[in-house]
View (cartoon, rainbow, N blue to C red):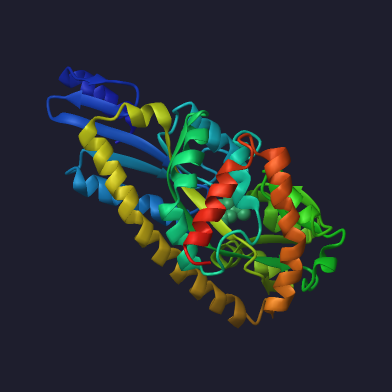
Length: 345
Ligand code: 6CS
């Protein structure tokens, strides 16, 4: 039932709607929320939101109905950030790579070679980190965005129209990035010429040569068919793709205790679910890309020595983050680094 129809039914029953997707009537309270994602049907973020909606509906005996929106249905990635902030949507999967002009500290995820090489260990840190789940969350909340969880969509790799094996291969290379300025800075550190752009334009831009390469987890490179218009994929594992489960801060604060607990518990249990989902999709798409003989992709596996050369160029970007980006003197980064070290890396 659409929201408009629902309001009509409630009005007919003499009930009321608080304008936040929560309505009370003779049949008890009902909740109708919108959940927007940056990906499309089948991709990890969308599958997450569908599973979340299903679990909430079951746990609430049908009282919670969540409409899940694919990317594009409600506008661009940055439009979606605004919709969450003004409460047009209650929930969103958001990539920090699109909020860097606003929440400067969130650009911490743009730093290459920061998290452990192991995706499992990285997810553990994302789950447990106080720097992220408390300190960074507060900074997002100043902008009406509450990140309830951080999760990886997998290690990121490079695709390109020429082989990328050493930093010099990036010299003047036209690299597509998300919009956060520190992501651009990270590629400038290798000598590249980065261009921010929405992924909705990326296939065409790669096909036409407007940009020569991009970074993403393997499932996304496969599902969005980027590899079809690229010749090489470098297994660089230079960073993890981190997504956030976010809610509008005021809306979340206004939920009754029982509903808030249900949301929190579901967000928590989804962490293991989404880890398995991204793992499965990343493994399957690696095979798809390898076996697609109609669209051959040369896969370059960097040695540890080769990765080290990129890491050396990437490390000074941390100092830039501390001195020129951070609004809290690098405290979130320093705390996160301590947590990473304590985790055994
Ligand atoms: O490259 C991007 O912009 C997109 N990549 C992923 C893995 N998810 C959504 C995002 O917008």
